[in-house]
Structure formats: C-alpha cells, structure tokens
Image (cartoon, rainbow, N blue to C red; front, side, top):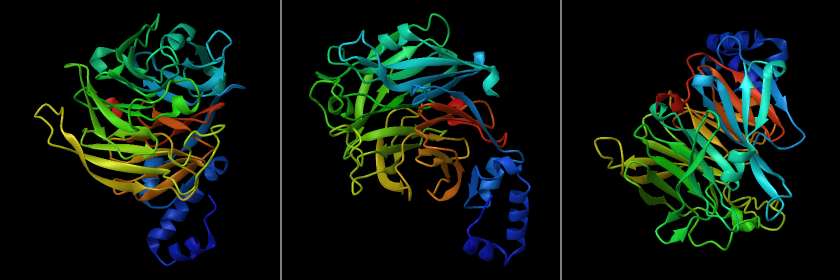
Length: 371
C-alpha cells in the first residue's frame, strides 16, 4: 500500500508506526493498492489476508442494491438499477437476481434473474434479511404509475414468492421506498424519498421525504424522522439502539437524474432510538447528529457490523468508520452503490455492473446475522 509522504514521516517516529508499516508491506502485493489504512484499528478489520475478488460482471447494472446473504443456501440476492423492459408501462424495471455457487471466485459464481419476483415488486430496490426464524427477506419496492410502493416479504427459496406487507401511511401512498433495515425485535426501518416521481415512474408525492418504522407483528407504521432532502441508505446497529440514515440530496433526481448540487447533503446522519419498550420495539429517533460527510464523492449504501463500525459505499469504494464517525480505512475498488455482509469476514460490494467479494478478518460479522 502506498502511503502519502507526510503520513510516512509521522508514522516513522514511533515503534507502533513501524509495526503498522511492516504489516501493510506484508499484504500480498496484488492487494496493496486495494486498502488504505487511516487508523491502526483498520488492520484488525482487514485481518492477515485481506483480499478483493471480482465475482461477476455484466453489461447491465445488475448489482445496485440488496446484497442480502441467505445462510441456509449460502447465496446472495441483489437488485439492479433501472434496466430496459418493453413489457412495462414506461419501458423499464428493476431486476432481482439470485447469486449462487461457492461465491469465492468468478468461475464458480452464477447470476440468475428472478423475473416473476421482480415484476411482483414494482421497481424493487433495497433489501435486508428478516428474522432468521421467519426465513424471509424484506424488500422495498418503489412502486409504479399504477401500483403503490411499500414493503414486501420475499421467500429466499423457490418459487421466491413476494407478498406485500405495507403500501400506505394512513390514507397516503408512500413516495418510493428506497432502502430497509431490520432491528433485533423485528421492526423495519425504511426510507421514502421522491426519486420515483423525479424519475417519472411514480405519481406526484403525497408525503414528505422521511423515514418510517413498521412493526409487522402489530401492523403499525410510524414516521420517525424528517428534515431530509432525499433519505436513501439506512442501517441499524446490532442492538437496535442506533439508526444510520444517508441523505443523498446532492443528487436530487432532477432533469436527467445526473444533476449534482454540491452544496446539498451527501451525508450520513445517526440517531439514538430513545424510549424503547422492554421488548426492544417502539421509541422515537432523537439526538440527530452528523456522523460523516465523505471528503470524496457522496455516501450511498450503509451497513453495520457487530463491533459498531459502519461500512459505506462511495465513489472510490467502501469506507469504514468507527462508532464515533472516525474514518478507519478504505477498500479502494471502484464506485460502490451498496454493500452487504456474507458469513464472518465476508463483505459483498456492488458497483452497478460489477460484484465484488471482500475477505476481511473472521471477527467481522454483519449486524443482520444477529437477528
């Protein structure tokens, strides 16, 4: 790994720094350029043999959202970006695919489209593993001009049936639900920006750009956070006490969707879940604070591990932050839209037309594996 000269000089003054440089120098040469360490703590996340592997590549943006790993079949579910489909009203849709094989190298990885499931969830997007005992995944669907968006339970085994569990907030249809995260108590947080309207596949918005929490056990849904331009990626800490929300207001979705307003948010905020019930449900989101604003590009997807670190998809790869929002290091691969954990020590990163596997220390476990 190549460190800036000023950083090398600072490290050279301590024995600890010498040890760090020694460890970095002993990463396999092919991988050195893939990892940038901003803190000694990052080395414990990387482990002794960090590795980046390109698992799959496509001429279509098949690897955009989702990245939900299902342990019983050791397989991965992903959602595409918008792709052409002449059979739909506006000629596009978003495709859910099932990634199977041993998922260690491209030669052993297969990507199979789930067309029927995709069409059952209009403009499917973010997804998350639901409670392990339920053996379902939860998916956000943005909706279409004729079908409301909301949340779906999806079977991760054939025939991959999708059942809508939420479509409205009272009398109002959601705008275009974007991403989801599940708490240990089984509640579902999700973001609802107006991107669907901006991109022309949803009617005029009826609700603000905000965050909701849905409890499938009681059927109750509550608006829990507002004040966003475009709430997008969302994550929950392993104990359900902290919620992370990315505001991608710098890309409002105007014009051709590529407009960037650099003075708008491209920022990660965090909230404390205050006043929860004894069973871990309920409460409200308080103590909003700015967790991080990336110094390069804009934050997109976010996931957490059981050590309370956050992994964020960015224009230059995946950045890892500690509980206090301090940058620990970067996995420099390419523009990453979202990420998801596999088994211990495995992270999947999605770059639209590319899907990567990142091998880290075995002590790194995604929060979704605790529910």
